[in-house]
Length: 287
Ligand code: SF4
Ligand code: SF4
Image (cartoon, rainbow, N blue to C red; front, side, top):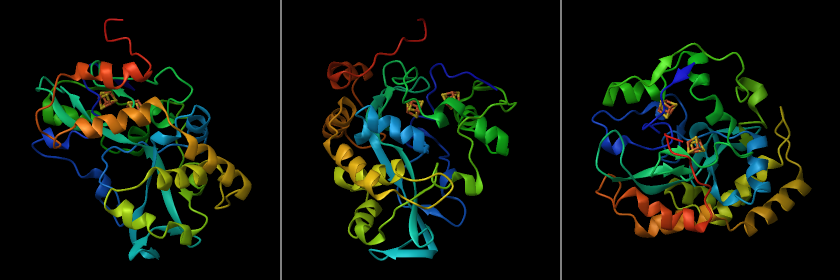
């Protein structure tokens, strides 16, 4: 596998607003995500623990799915395992000014960790770098699914996926029952999600709501739907206390942003919004 990522970041940004033929690849099949995110990064249990331990739990957010054969909460029927709502844990996006593929700077939903000036990941060399990001697009190649690199090629030209041979070692590749408790999590107390699901359906999750899912993911047990109650409560307390540079930067970007797809200021505004709050620097492509 070889990819040409310089000047791309297509898998880290929701670039549908600047695409003439936006992809709907995450919304095919019987289960439709409750959120409207694009290119959600599904984290492993280990990733979730690393974010919690690094004091970055406020960047975590769940993905639930509509499913007519699931459990109903707040009038929404949700995918469930053993009658407990199932979810992925991903990374929040925030509106950022990005100049993609020679376009002018535009407000686009962007991974909280993407440096919009260099289009590089701020946690690439950190303990928290997600397994899914390290492997991307290896899982797609292994499953014969279209990659984001190819979608970028199809829309903007150029060569992004240089070699489509899947790598031998895909650390975050979990499929079927082995994914339960490792990448597909369950929420232990469905009644505790009353009100939360209604907010999730309109993209209005609160910090407290997101902390509940972070706690459930880190206290899950691999291969089972079991959640350790003591671990859940201690993880919830830790997640509630989190107040990181990235959480504060998301709030700031949301205050500054105009509509998705509209003209944005120069991406170097990130120096004030992110770098000055303690965001790790990125080297740039000449570094
Ligand atoms: S879409 Fe492909 S080429 Fe573009 S940044 Fe992601 S992995 Fe790299
Ligand atoms: S963590 Fe880094 S590589 Fe992964 S989606 Fe976010 S910016 Fe991209």
